[in-house]
Amino acid sequence: MSDSASKKQLIKHLEGGEAFMALEDFIDKIPFEKLGEKPCNLPYSFYELFYHISYAQKDILEYTTSEAYKTSKWPDDYWPNESAPQSKEDWGKLKKDYFEDRERFKNFILDADIDLNLPVKSSDNHSLLREVMLVIEHTAYHTGQMLIILRLLGLYK
Image (cartoon, rainbow, N blue to C red; front, top):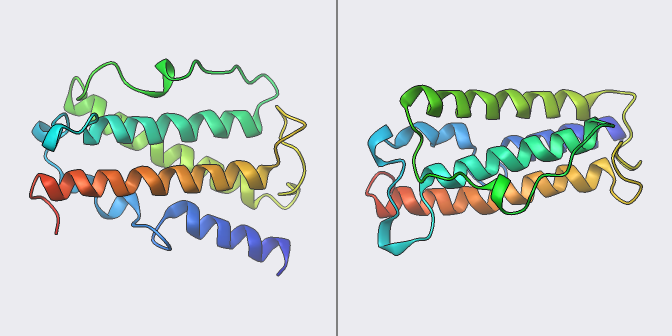
């Protein structure tokens, strides 16, 4: 498989819909008022999981593309302080930022001058391929949790 074909396949997985449901296929199935609910004593809400996915993607994007990357503090920076967004505008901005960052990541990956197997700008130990796979796996994992929350809230079958 050519490097270009490999990159296109990675993009398909990054977008979801291959081994896990694409976020855009269900992100708007939950009403704003339910974003902070933690059904069945789960330790996280739908909002917290999406915030976490979004933050991790942005962090890895910066890690792979910036020579001035600054390490985030785990776990404090990766999880929100609240179980729900403060406003509908905040929720809309989080979703918009997530999809814009994913688009930036896709464009970076597809750049013909970028080699998937070379180390990223911030590390001699991690390749772009490793970082893309990390985002895909991480998103898939938490996407499943978000779907479980939707099911427990009676919003998805």
